[in-house]
Amino acid sequence: MNRVYMLLMFAGTFFTAVSQVLLKQSANRQWSSVIREYLNWRVILSYFIFFCVLILNTYAFTKVEMKYGTVIDAFSYVFVMLLSYFLLHEKFTRGRVIGNLIIITGIVIYTL
Image 1 (tube, rainbow, N blue to C red):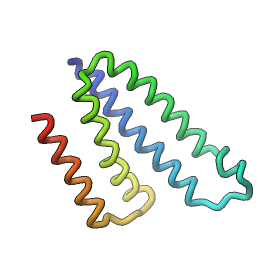
Image 2 (image 1 turned 180 degrees about the vertical axis):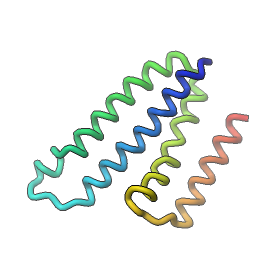
Image 3 (image 1 turned 90 degrees about the horizontal axis):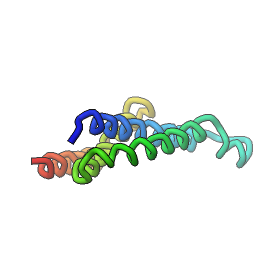
């Protein structure tokens, strides 16, 4: 197992969360037309990031065991919650916190 590829996958997971926040920002705005709603810089950048992460993960999975890759991907939920709080100023709800604690607990148990 190569730690460099695991870090690349972790970075990909973070950028996936960033692209999801960009999509949410775009969805929260009012657009003058349907075309502008789907063809604006946030949506285009978000899908470009998704594509790059897909290529990165496809390559990284050739070097990292599958069981670690799925654990790393689970961190995207935690990243989305944190980025939503800091960038979108969304509140932490009890359900979100409990859900993320369950995810983190599962990650810890799985990797032991």
